Each structure stands twice: as C-alpha cells, then as structure tokens.
Length: 249
Image (tube, rainbow, N blue to C red; front, side, top):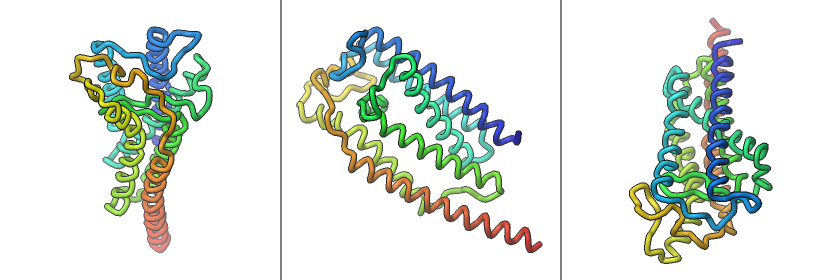
C-alpha cells in the first residue's frame, strides 16, 4: 500500500469515526429536545443559551479538527486543502448514514435538516449537503491523483474564482430561507448569534421550511463544477506534457 493510500485509509477511518461521534451527540440532543414518537421535526424547539453556545462552539471545534488532520496529512497547501475537504465530506456523509442506522432518519433525501449554525443557522434538504460532499470528494480525488504524478496542483485565478463563487452561492442558498423568515417576521430578537442571551431558534418558533431554492443551489453547483472542470483539464494537460517530456528524455 503506497503512502497516499495509507493516508486516505486512515483519514477515512478518522472521518467515519468523527461522523459517528457527531451522530451520537445529535442522538442525545434529539432525545432531550425531540423525543420519540414524534422525533425531530420543524418548527424547531428553542435551545437555552448556554447549550446553544456549546453547540455552536462544538461545530467550530469539529471544523478545526477536520482542518487540522488535513494540514498534518498534506505535503503542500493544495494537498492539505484536498485532505481537509475529503475528511469533511466523508464525515458529513457518514453522519447521515449513522442517523439512518440508529434513528431511521432522514425519511428521504428531501427531508429538511438544520445543516450548520455558523455564522447563522443553515437549513435545507439532506440531498443538498450530500451532493456537496460528493463534489468535495471529487475535487479532493483530482488533486491527490495529480499530486501523486508530480503535477503542480496550485490553483489559478480562473479556477479559484468560479470554485469560490460557486461555494458562496451554495452557502447562501442554505442560509437565505432562514434569514428571510426572521427578517420577514420582524422578530424583535433578531437572528441568533453566539453573544445572544435568548434561546437558539426562539426567533423561528413557527418556522416550517417548505421551499428550498433549488435554482440557486444548482446554479452554485454548476459554477463550482465548472471551476473544477477547468482545473481538471489543466491538470490533465500538464500531466500529458510532463509524460511526453519524460518519455522524450
């Protein structure tokens, strides 16, 4: 087993284990706030400020851990980034796999979930983050593949711009429904943040998401995939040139 495959094996194991830990925490939270037989559903139950802050910081700590293992495993900036997004994607996918195993949830790929809390709560159908995770694995795979073939995988602006822009569109599609509801309801408490003294989700006591902006999400996904495609074909061209030069000599 080559060095990169050993790394991917242990990074995968680490990420799956983190996915299980994430699932365990959510199972405990749901037992407290969404007990059976009803289980998790919208509208969301307000979470006391002290617990909300811990949950917010736990999510931040999770990102730091995933980024940390990617940084330790990678040999340069691009490979560190690749291992980070790979770990993030595997963690996210197996989080849902374990929820399905232990709680038989989500009911379908179109079941709504609270995806993230930073900087404001993100909501959307489960299918959306799973799609993003698969794209992250694709990009990580491309980077690692060409890194192992001694191709310079540093991103150029023509790839960085669409990849970054696509990510921002996708993130905004997750946040906009929640933010629009809070602003539209003219909540006196405003959008929750870590410094708030009010309960998390107090501002959306009657919020039941119905319409995800798939057009915006898919637009972001298309822009992201375009940037990845530009990167892939440039890497492929460089690899062919490198092979030709090697064979010539």
